[in-house]
Length: 464
Ligand code: PLA
Image 1 (cartoon, rainbow, N blue to C red):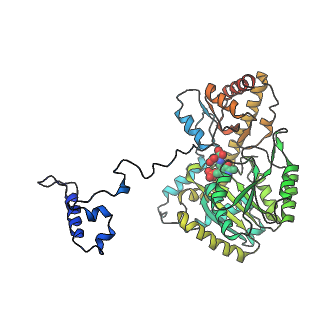
Image 2: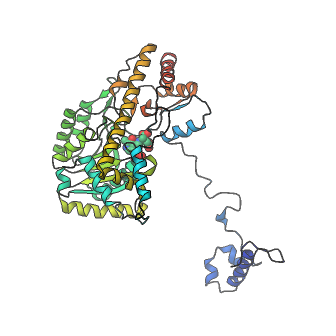
Image 3: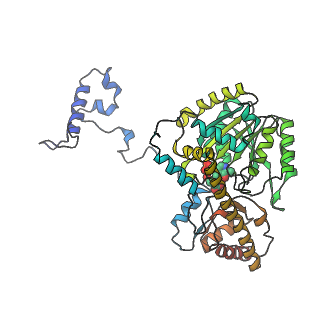
């Protein structure tokens, strides 16, 4: 093979020579033939050299010059700002990512063990997975959220596909609904995870909100919630956080879930569950799945987006599943066939590594047990951070009732701090959090709690 960069005696690169010959050759052809299909300057250039196309940016202007700078993501952008801050006391409480007492990311021991097993198994190959993902992972994921004795699973009424973590599962479910479901409106809680409205809108649904959080009581506005769902059109889709509501940390009680379920079923509203924190709310996988299991037990249909990012610490592996619980097994088969048509042109098929880790852990009794212990330890550390922060604010006599810090559950505390106070804490104390006043309790440690408490105290007493 001739090296395209080698120069001949006249100083021409061989590639230039070839292009020049090609240009001459094409120029000699009739205008109706190949030359007319070339960019105009290549065929019309009398010197026979190929001139750049006007779209190639040679004339100074980019064809993308009109593209405006997009803002950073409201959650992931907090990490970008944090990374740029040289301060040694900086703390990132923006994204919901678990950190150890030492402030380090955690890879669970059980995950390391499962990975080691996979690496040591020479029979494992890197072939494409089917469009629907790893079959074993799908079955185990459905069991984890719906319960191993779930009638829907036993009756083969659940179509489960492996997706790219929680977000990918939500997106695939949305695109399926936009194509195959009669009602295009989804009701989402006010407030909710900031990415929800974007995923649903871009996936083809129109978004409305229902009342959820009462800033006065810092608890659930069950009355407002029930009223808003009562006035939703029959058949509308309703997004429900299975547990550990993000960003508020406020969940309905089981009695309230029952009220919501009855109302939704009587109106034919379709539940779309988002389960990103199973095990993180209470420390128990089963307790955190109760809301979902109530809806499945009544025989009705629903969608479920599951994520293993938080509860197995597999954030970057992008492991999740979408399940659609159907009325009958034959509907589930057809639903799955259509999910494949959504997935194939989007990313073809999902990655193998993370799903293999999850399947290895879920199917092995000892590994599963080890996982539940580690999960509980993470949940417990978060709960202890709540108590510690609450005590620290009390000790400082910070004005206000901070009991919501210990009442709220899951990864986040919705502090009630406004965007000005947040900006003050970032500027003066290098505390990074989302502007809605949400802090990731999982990012705190006993070393950083006093610093955070000082910052909150200063924000509340100086900027009000
Ligand atoms: N659903 C909810 C309610 C979430 O809070 C998140 C993640 C997801 C789905 C998606 O997670 P996944 O795609 O990684 O599985 N929310 C995080 C991270 C933890 C984020 O914003 O992406 C958050 O800080 O809110």
